[in-house]
Image 1: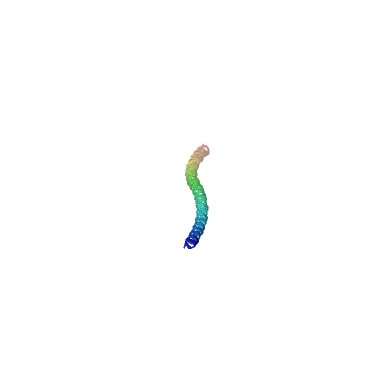
Image 2 (image 1 turned 60 degrees about the vertical axis):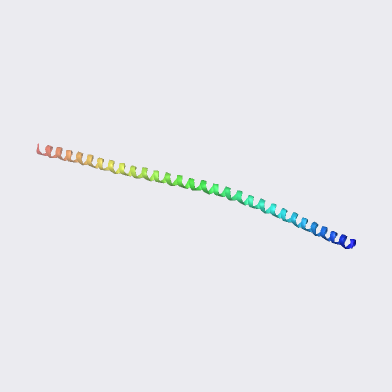
Length: 107
């Protein structure tokens, strides 16, 4: 009877040792998985920050493009207005010269 109890105790101790080994292995795997998760999370955070920076850069570039388009439109308008003024001035000079020519021809 004592021998049976000792055998059962040994078997129980062996099973306990096996379970502790399995637990240690599971804890090690969990630690590895946790570290992998943290690494992936950190990489995702970095990529997210890079994406935000790229989006801000794109928005800034778009605003700059819009500013340049507005400046170009204004420059074209000024050029056109200046062109019209030059044409009117030249036309007035031509009219004056024609008037002077007619006056000189009549004299």
